[in-house]
Image (cartoon, rainbow, N blue to C red; front, side):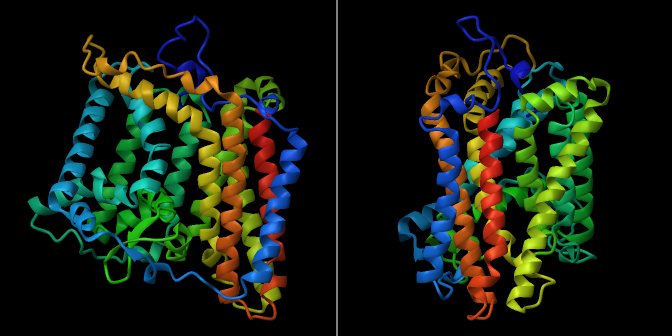
Length: 455
């Protein structure tokens, strides 16, 4: 991450250096042998697949047609202009506060802009989307900037000269990769405020200009953070039915409604591959090898990051093509139709990889938010006494949660893929055709656990 051990606000109160950003140590923290963790994870996936094959012969998910209506009074509160307006104004005020810090604050790691980007925006949108659904779309500051421009120019923000859907999600995939490259390829760049400002300025220009050309639907296809948050929101228990009614439903029902847009495989490959690389680059063997070639570190990290994303893209696409061939169905869009099954895996890895980092650094963000310009302000003094390192005092519990998050993410991915497969594939070939995907899921699980537990 952009804020690592060097990026902590202070040293620990007891004088020890701050812990590594991504949390609990490694194999020794597990209450069971690491080999048994691998075996249990693989067995869980295979057992899930067997149970699904025997008891889940037809599709049970109905996407946006499913769900039990939310209590009427709660639906009114959620949809009220007061609730939505309060939420939007709060987010825009905090955004303006952080932008002020980014422009006028000092270029030091205590500037809240760094944690606003790498902690609140990048990691924090996951729990926010899981709990609140597609809230980022509602509060997206660039959407509101575009609407303000259109109002001044007397234009309809929804209208454009070009249909944004023709590009699919490829613009979001490219911008997502540019962000994870900034974050992971070179720590000096990630911790340089001028570089961060420049990246966001360029991305804002691309997104707002694109929205002027394509209408505000451009954000749903190109804004990297809105696309990411919208994917995660598909695992929220809250959603809207096709008739617009707010409902509570099985998160996998929500996930089933994710449209198979072109470029969806690329988006999930960047998210999955970059998280895996973030673990990989902390491996002692890689660190030692890269440090011997320090003058090429940015190039090496860039090549490795791209390789991880491409490996996910190629292996998932190949497994889907093989499944389509075994099932004798149209292969051209099969991978995008099954790419929704990778979303639970991505969320599982985010929880496993960033849980302790997020808790610790979010507290630090609140602590430094009260002094954005480093002038001695103390507007968040109430947060000063919170021990941001308390979560690290429970390494075994954290290790167990991380392993469970990875395994559960893969199991949910298998369920989502199986339900979609039995819908798309002929009944007599559905089970056999899923074997390539099952093998791939087991490989992803074992590799992910190895990366997680080796750092």
